[in-house]
Amino acid sequence: MPRIDQPRRCARHGQAGFTLLELLVALTLLGLVMAAVFGELRFAARAWDATNAKQDRNSELLSVHSFVRQRLQQVYVRQRNRRRDDETSPLVFDGDSRSMTFLGTMPEQISAGGFYRISLSSENGDDGSNLFVSWRPFDGDDTEPVADSADNSRVLLRGVAEIRFSYFGQANDSVAPQWWNSWPSRDTAPALIRIDVSFAGGDPRRWPELVVAPASANAVQRLP
Image (cartoon, one colour):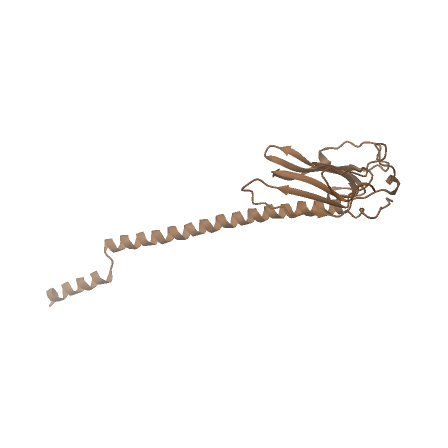
């Protein structure tokens, strides 16, 4: 009897276990599944990082857009400056296709309050054009120059393909309102200011349309 039962027990043990070939196949399949899972995880991580980077760029762009819009909306014109347009009259607004200068305010986070002579300009950089802002305190009569320093200038945008400023309004009674590449009047502000920003091919950033009507376009504001 023992000799008869022994082969049956061995057969049952063989059916309950795995052969070496089956074990190798199972490990191979498991490795393939794990490789696929980790590949998907790496792809998801890269996609997440790319999405975050894009959101950061868009957030930065919108912050700059909002900052510039607020500065242009708050352009001030002094009433005593509304006089004959010549080189001796104190400058109210000066602008061409690459830069503009005007009187306005700066955010409390980066200034001590009061009015400033603000300049926005397109400057050439190592990787394209940069949108640059600088400001200096306004001295009342705007006769004493206050030198700019590293503390009152910032680069707002870097690596831009092109930045263009344009202005709409009636510079004098003899000319109909129109768009200008260079604002011809130094003692009045334009009715509209437009800033166009374009990026190089492959750059995912998109500049929202920016056309601003300064508060002083139709009403002269008196400084305290």
